[in-house]
Length: 304
Image 1 (tube, helix red, strand yellow):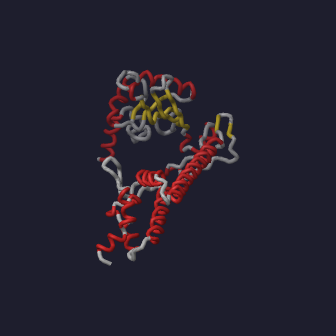
Image 2 (cartoon, rainbow, N blue to C red):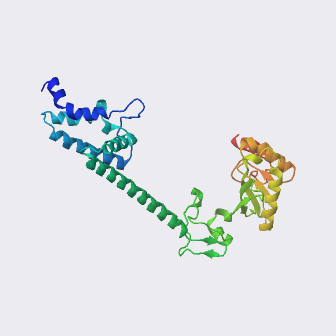
Image 3 (tube, one colour):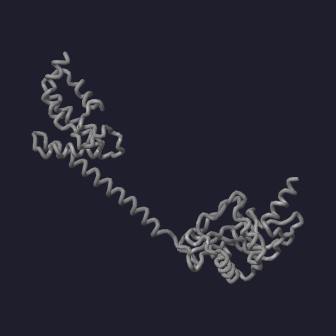
């Protein structure tokens, strides 16, 4: 079959496709990788429809033409993005041609698929929300759960209970060295902190129960206004009211760029010690190291 014969044979069908090529003011992205299952199903149905029409045409090289309309270089409207493909189908239906019913069926199944996906996603979201609503409640008075907290061992590897724990006596059974967590937020909602109530050591300072502040943070819009000391005083007062056995307050996990600030608070007597370590630092004989810079000094001596 010569190029002239091929062009003449496909002219009637090709002219219809050419008439629906994108104009200058239209968007025609030639791609099928849209990630939309409903769109791609409709695209495949449209290709099948075009194949059936090609089979009715009176020319011999039909398989070549079927491949041609699937070639991105052909500029086929069937290869537009999902929005462009839908617009093309709707335009053909609006013309009420002999194939309008078939094209309307493709659009109808496209819509039905999209509606089903929306319904499925809604069911998934509802199931997730329902699980949250029906989740056990854990309060100071007890729990609605019908199971005991699961504990992960060993503690040295960061093991914690897998469910929330409220009661101090229960928490103490699961926390290494019986450290009880304290989560705090200021009354003005502009500061928050994490601390623990820890037991003293017989051989090391501090020997009595103490509060270890592991994280203290000011809200962004409250920084640089001189509020940190007031919020820290507020926190320490509430901690000591809650845990009257604690006799001192120690900051750990200090960042190096905030170490000077915490050392100043030690000088002012607001806290009893500050450390960049994850624990209260002491000398080899168990004496408290009050400031971060002194801790670095002892670190160097140990290294030497």
